[in-house]
Image 1 (spheres, rainbow, N blue to C red):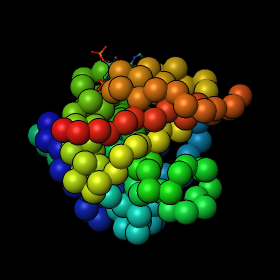
Image 2: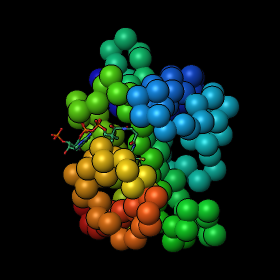
Image 3: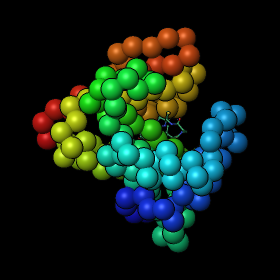
Image 4: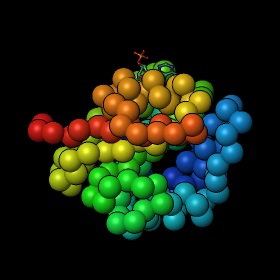
Length: 155
Ligand SMILES: CC(C)(COP(=O)(O)OP(=O)(O)OC[C@H]1O[C@@H](n2cnc3c(N)ncnc32)[C@H](O)[C@@H]1OP(=O)(O)O)[C@@H](O)C(=O)NCCC(=O)NCCS
């Protein structure tokens, strides 16, 4: 398994991962190639979008870090990072999420980002546990979503 920056040719594989997650969890989400390109790969606020790739080239998962713009719809403070993680259910609990976050954290430091927000569905037990294990801590939330923050700090 290798981790590298996402390229336009990865959009179909990223969409497949999103579809596999939707099928396994029942949480519907956009999965199309155009969405992967516009929302992740070519997004103007992208700091880093990494893919985890198997030896045969199969995309196993991806993680996105964006810079929160002023007035963003998630209510995240301007200048914070905003993270999203998507690992194929077939590849879960193999350390892929952890490996992706090591790259994301390095990119956040390089970009001078001091805090990273993760907004997670309140019922998403696995997602909450993953971000907690990576060092994120809850700072706000409501009945439907929990927001956790990672303090980037010094290397
Ligand atoms: C949640 C998710 C990102 C975890 O990715 P992963 O590659 O399986 O995570 P890792 O194998 O790197 O796990 C690292 C640690 O996180 C915690 N963790 C991860 N998934 C967990 C789960 N389902 N239940 C409990 N703890 C979990 C564990 O502490 C784990 O360490 P361990 O396996 O040594 O116990 C992945 O399951 C996923 O993409 N889920 C669907 C989408 C999603 O919920 N995204 C995040 C919220 S928006």
